[in-house]
Amino acid sequence: MEIKSAKFLISNTDVAKCPSIEMPEYAFIGRSNVGKSSLINMLCNTKGLAKTSATPGKTELINHFEINEKWYLVDLPGYGFARKSKTTLEGFGKLIQSYFLKRDMLTCTFVLIDSRLPPQKIDIDFIRWLGSNGIPFVIAFTKIDKQSNSKTTSNIEIFKNELLKEWEELPICFVTSAEKKIGREEILDYIKEINLGLKK
Ligand code: GTP
Ligand code: MG
Image 1 (cartoon, rainbow, N blue to C red):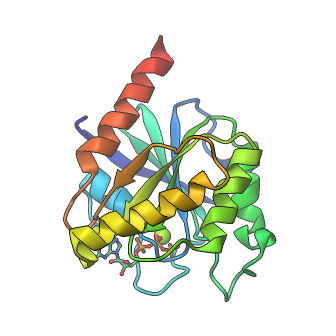
Image 2 (spheres, rainbow, N blue to C red; image 1 turned 90 degrees about the vertical axis):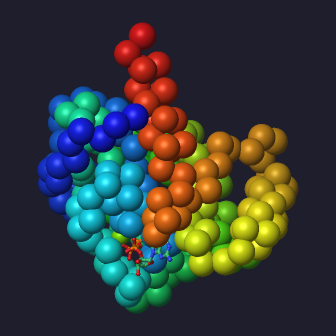
């Protein structure tokens, strides 16, 4: 899919104030610093659209971007950042929880997982929480440019095996690098297919 326009709409602390015009919505979530904002910029081919930082905790609000005047990308704050939240389930933060529980037009969630790390409890807990609340999601492994392909492959395998301990089926998984623009076509095509399906 071609990105013809990517426009910042609004930042919010209140889910009730998120855009009310109904369009398919895709949210990006994951631990602080995993690369959510960077991946959004890469998908949109626009540096600086979503604010990024080497310091965790950069994104603090719910940020809506309107793409091709037809669908939304949403950049969310990260979870698991010690200064703002505890590492327990409640550590996902009230804002994140209320977004996922109340945002009816959420079409699909991209859960970002750092491809360099062994499975992190908070990610597994968050994925379980999405599942138990019936929220549709896929996974995007990030930052694969930072290590060898074989390391990426083996880490992804370990993560999938961890998921299979409690899930019967694996979610759709994307492998990405914002730095090297890897995974862009795959993710945009996936979104395009869903958008087409919703029109029928
Ligand atoms: P918060 O908003 O703080 O939750 O973080 P975030 O998940 O939005 O991460 P962000 O996109 O701000 O990126 C965090 C850091 O990782 C930045 O220094 C990015 O440049 C870097 N980064 C993100 N994606 C990649 C990638 O694919 N490759 C490399 N090498 N660095 C990346
Ligand atoms: Mg961010």
